[in-house]
Length: 231
Image 1 (cartoon, rainbow, N blue to C red):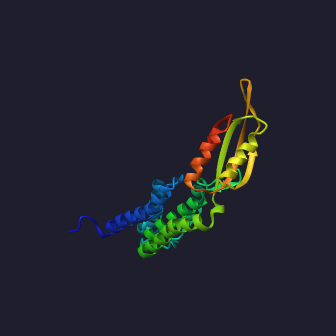
Image 2: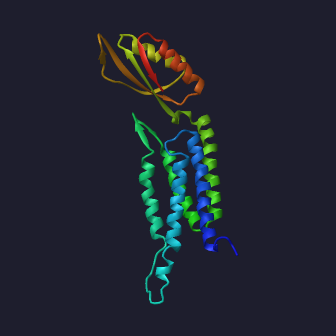
Image 3: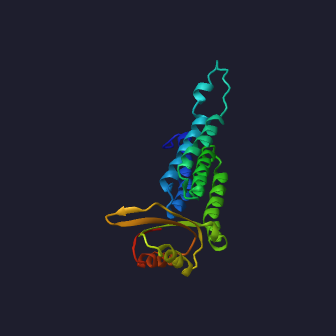
């Protein structure tokens, strides 16, 4: 005699498979320190799988009654999952000073929900192929974007410094020295600390290498009057 009935084995298999495939995508997002990482994607995948299993088999005892004339659409619950997951994905999108971040993570959360639904319906090969394509997209195309589309990657640099007439020119000179393109900048109102006045300079720059970022912070901090640098 089997330890578990056949139906229970299938349910366990589907839930674990959903956790595995969605977790793979979550690991990639976790490695890039995105707000929705391993746990978020794993829970989305398992939850979607559960909803699909519920939609397909959860009402069998109710529908299969001898005197029942009920017509049931198994796609009803999954349709709500797909539309509802958008609210979770929207929470990962950050808009800051003209720069939009988190769109890829929001899309990966949406895909994790789709994986859960597919596995919940027993479409294992489809889920495996989708996971492979998604991971190839996240890993492979990220390298291509870094190499050929660097201008699409933007970062924000915030400098708080004591007001001086030539300060802004000195800040810009550092970016020019390191060959970093400034796509946008803003200067916030001065704030007084004791008898000194400080302003905050916000620069939006194109994506750069880590070694350049370290040099940028070091050189900015060497400028007279600079109090804080955030990258």
